[in-house]
Image (cartoon, rainbow, N blue to C red; front, side, top):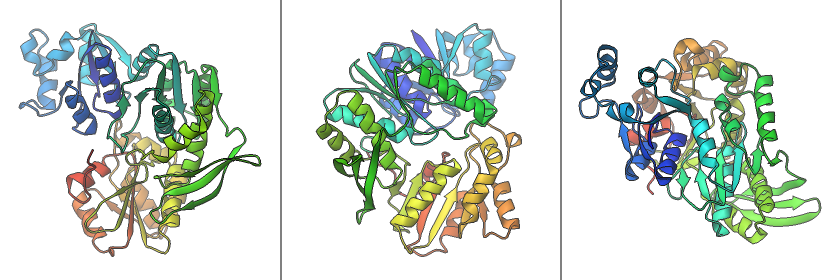
Length: 451
């Protein structure tokens, strides 16, 4: 089957694309930006249409669409969409996107990313799905690593890039399929997991759900769709939590008065004690021995931009973290303050979507109101426009009016100049789910990750 994917370069979509190719389909797609996902796709021989490649710009494509509906040659690079049998859309692709309008005019069948993930999962004996407002990417990757160490050859679909190899997928055997289960647009309801995890549920994606009550109802349906669902720690607790000199996390797992194992992780944030417990419980449910669980957790290198330390010529400690919800940001800040004691901390936040900033404004103000240098970078709009909510500048303005030392920047050159005023031992914590980490690499502020 010829499948054309809209938003194919996204972290989840690109993983799906590689899997679909592995299943024998002919895959191509469209994306607006070049990033790690597009690199992976092209490394796997998948064609990606990008703006301004081969002299074809977005406006030219739109003009061609609106003015010409007869010859393939008139569509300026849309031939693969015209020839496809099925269109898969990312949740970021709106109904008024001209690719969507063209697909509908041509009578193409269009399905969502979540529906395609559900169809792929039907090829496997046991689906392990990790959902939750926070922590699902790391927990998913931990479970995969434990199964891999145990010799199970699992297949993986991940909403991030593993630090050890830079990949967001693994093509394995058909017994175990480990996948991140995203709640946005109820995508996770297309899955029928053998074992699932719900790490936590907080108000999130309310632009879709409308209310927290609706969101909780969707998580309840996900629970009901699972043969076995882990929602609490099963009596297991982490004790004696501390960090080594490099920031690595050290602790022991206990069930009641029984010590299960000591763990020494490469990753830093204390919230990972909870992720480890979920991974442990899933692995035990799947019959994995403690020795493999311990090895799988201890040699786990982490996922990119999950409290990831970056090499920087100007500063000794630069951290990039995907945190974009107030709860996640506060935990990242707390981790940085604990690991880098008695050092100046500058937190730079790039909000992800305007609607989230507006909906969770009181929580954002509480998190950043306590910081010495709350710093904001222009909002990553994703699927939205500024009219959908509140911008990063407006957030900074509110803090400034309340007497806080807040700063806002809409370009990296000005942000870089501001940061130049701090000493080398200042800790820089970049938080957000936008493109700021890629900008840091592109501007050579930090070294790119090599795989």
